[in-house]
Amino acid sequence: QMEQSGGGSVQAGGSLRLSCTISGRTFHAYNMGWFRQPPGKEREFVAAISQTGDRTRYEYSVRGRFNISRDNSNNMLYLEMNDLKPDDTGVYYCNHDGYFESVVGGKAFFWGQGTQVTVSA
Image (cartoon, rainbow, N blue to C red; front, side, top):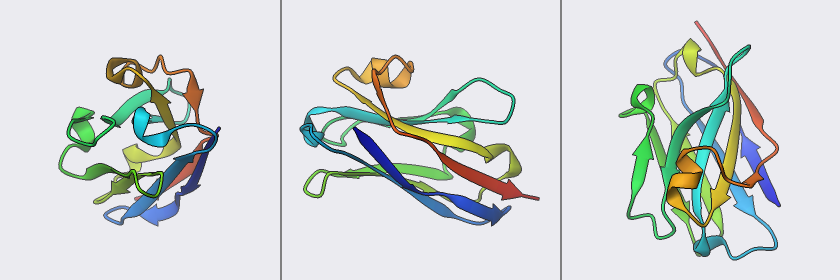
């Protein structure tokens, strides 16, 4: 089971942080990622991080603004979002999988419940 927290509403240019954890599984064994679903659109990849954190990948539009990180000692995944734009609005989901490319490709079996991020102009 994955549990998310964070999110909310912010004006453009603001910052938010999302958090995610796994219960009942070995956190450090999994690659993890974030997806988002904008209103009326399909779910899309945002960022991914490998088990040890030595490998990350970002969707082009969030590079330089978002930072994915993990704290394996505390079983936490984070997404720091800076310089937020209205186009960043959506429901954000964390996921995890044993394969990095499955996380990136949205084929992970396990997903969080989603948390709303709203950015106003």
